[in-house]
Image 1 (tube, rainbow, N blue to C red):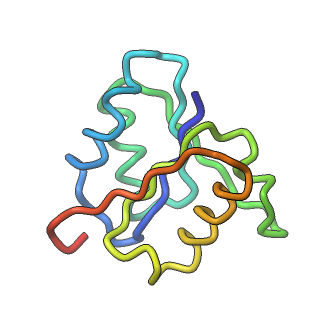
Image 2 (image 1 turned 90 degrees about the vertical axis):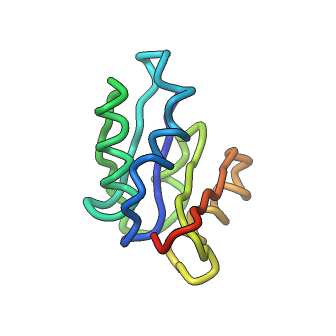
Length: 111
């Protein structure tokens, strides 16, 4: 399974991401993809590595079209206010259009 981790650039809640990824960590063929080297994406990479999962950086397509998520099976978005994020919301919109399952996960503290 190809899992894309996205979200708030200020996200630093490792426990929440690790908890979300843990059910997928038992299959070593599952891969966690991340787009940025900050916030939720970076924390997702750290969590994946701690869980013994593969992690890979993926670049956005220059056109900003669906091609960068077409091979993704699940999107986990870590954000407390998704409507305040143009990029994360755009990815979720693409996921809806492509029937890719997604989950938006927040936390109680300021992420």
